[in-house]
Amino acid sequence: MRRAHILGIGHYVPERVVTNHDLTRLMDTSDEWIQQRTGIRERRFSDGCTGAADMGAVAAREAMQNAGVQPEQIDCIVFATLSPDVDMPASAFLLQDKLDLPGVPAFDVRNQCSGFLYALAVADQFVKTETFDHVLVVGAEVHSTGLDLSTRGRDVAVIFGDGAGAVVVGPSPSAERGILSTHLHAEGKYAEKLWIEAPGSRLRPRLTEEMITGPEGRIFPRMEGRYVFRHAVTRMPEVIREALDANGLNISNLDLLVPHQANLRINQMVAMEFGLREEQVVNNIDRYGNTTAASIPLALYEAVRDGRVQPGMLICLAAFGAGFTWGAALVRW
Image (cartoon, rainbow, N blue to C red; front, side):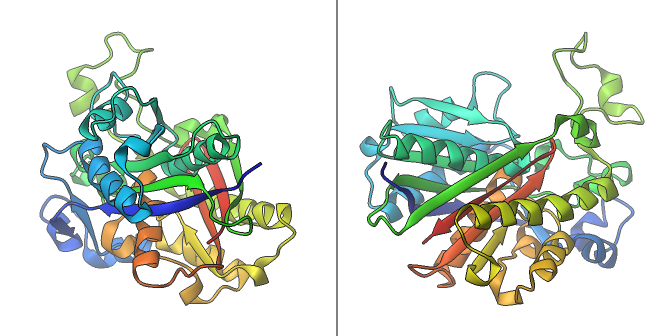
């Protein structure tokens, strides 16, 4: 069985920078309050008429260029997003059309903060089993158009930003390099701890004025923050150890950890548990906020661009998020 590898990576973030001070004009909050709880200083917001597929297309083109792969060599598209452009059909089809790849199979993965890892795991299997030679994996989110930017929604609204990241997964040029293993988990009994309840097919009607303007704001994301935090700082170290153990490795072998960017405090606690130095952990949440399915490829992109990733390095990608879902991928770069 051949090994799959990340052959190229791309990214996109909107030009509009929204600082914590900008949010103080919309809600009762402060720069100090946000930074202390999340580590976020600013995030990017779209122009309000750009969808996840639009952002994903820009990132995808850069990923293909960096991989040295022509669009016609892409055999499949896996699009991770919780903010689809439209309710139906899948945003992967819109992305496929923007990339002018008619006939290429495409589908969405709706696994929130772990979405990119789930999508990467699918691509890894497709390439390893020789089902496809080149799989385009995209994570893209437009959160800004779906946030309650008021004091009512501030606990969640200050966290999220918009952006996209993409990778081309294909056959590894070396048997020693590539995706060593992926590890995925979920526990649905915690779904209501972090969710967007409406609109939904179990509701009749699916959307009402009360769902938008009512005190609960049912169309906006809601989170029990402390509960999510406690599970994240438990599950992420567990799955990182699982990935290392599966390959007969330990934390001393790890060169770089690229965690999902949900909260800087979570990442710092994970790093502390393993005794990782600051330079061994990639963090960019201070500039982008939580971009959900885009956060890991965005962080990995910056690490590659800045020279922090070199051939032969052992890299772990890890995430935890709504669902609850969590996962890890171990890569020999």
